[in-house]
Length: 112
Image 1: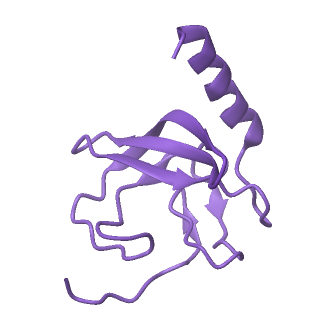
Image 2: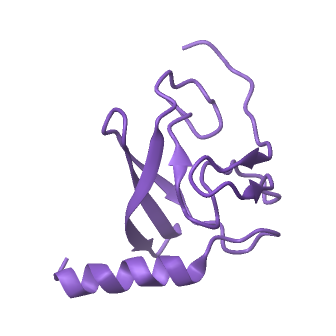
């Protein structure tokens, strides 16, 4: 695998058109904190931007880990890949916590 330059840059969400700032905590933002949608950009590791798919990934679930905290689970509309990304809750532009809670509530209602 060739080394790629890792990127942490601002972007416009292709799902809700919000302007999104880069993360400031040393990680790489790969999803919109407003609508929690993402793009299938990374292939090997967060920030590599090596995927050829570039499909829109939508949030399908939320998991809570004692080590990693809230994690958003995504599914790509184009290729079906499932991906997981840690929620950014302590940043200048934190993830929409109400939307995360709504996803968790609907999960509990489904009995999952």
